[in-house]
Image (cartoon, rainbow, N blue to C red; front, side, top):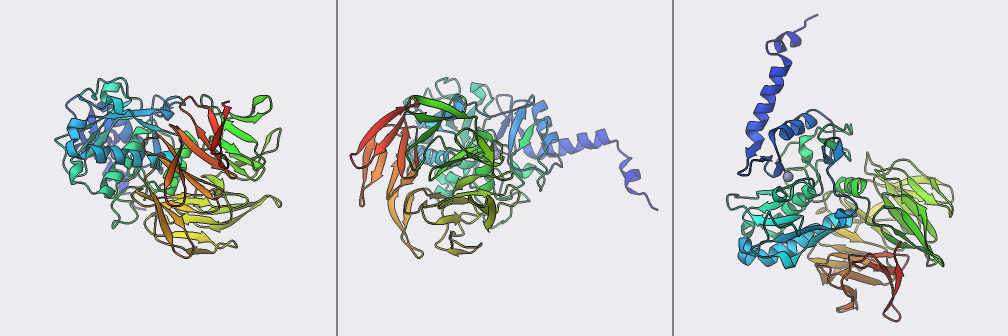
Length: 510
Ligand SMILES: [Zn+2]
């Protein structure tokens, strides 16, 4: 029996090998910054060399994927208060004629993560002046131009950084296409949520937590935090980042789904308490605690479903408690009369039969899924490939148009957003998607209506057939379920819309 390997390796000690490996990686991927930090792999700002080393040790050889940065045994993520106020300002003088474009694309990139997870980015426009700098403590991030950057370069600080090292620096955005600008900002906002580079991790589904990161999904060669230029990227012809199915699910695993207000068909309202994540039911006596934090909540008819946090099992509310109805899930969503859930390791979609208490696979992975009151839709895994509709039986789907970035379900019609998030389209049968509006912070459908929140959150709008009419002032989010529209106000109170009279009922807050 020959034994060559160990002898050859023994020429240098393991420690020396490791040190040499680290130095080789560092020479290629780590650049010191003028303020004493280190820019890792182009855009991840790490505070000191020890952290850089820990980061490198963390990813070496571990099969992981979308992962959250960790320091001292804790996730580097925003707490429940701050995750709804990830505020930023933009220094206008740095961007000149590009300022308005940057404002708009920051909204669009923010809206992508906000559609996936219970986070909210806030542009504090009042701070957009020469004083929007690293010393401005009225925001969590300042956005500035790095005039030494060329190409698609950018840099971003993680949530735990001191204010003066937590900023977004951008290269020459005037040279970037709209698609490039949206892709870069989507990736950088991922860092601002605590996500590290996915291409640093090995393929697989090991979910091994290390000293410097915790994996949230299986490895994904398509995701927002994977450089398209790095090995493992599944299609070299596609060179821009986007929020993939597993980004969507990993972001929910860390920050929960944006499902804060729900209504059963009978009008019973449930809402999350923002400070705790607990869920409450509103009844004659006010708000009553009915459950702890869940990854997501979905109301189907008169049934409330939830999901155990961290990609856990779907659960059903039974009036006085919750019962698990399946195994671990990536996400849950309303599915034309019942619940659907994705398999966290394959991405496949399964549909729940509430009578038989069984699940049936109805389709493979995609990037987004949503249902109108009567049909289930999905977007292909790359977003730019296709939109499909489930036949209603088996695992048979029909392609009903080209790609899109988001689906907007919940009403009698299905809607979607274009890749650039510059338009909303209504599904009109066949492969016809009719543009009905421009960009928005978010959209929901309820009954035959579709509603939108303006990009800066200043107005809630209702589509009136040929135009959009304002129906409510500033809102932090809009929600729909079972035909009802809700908004949350800046003070967290909840209002329900009465379309027949164009009025609002304030329900307070849990
Ligand atoms: Zn990056």
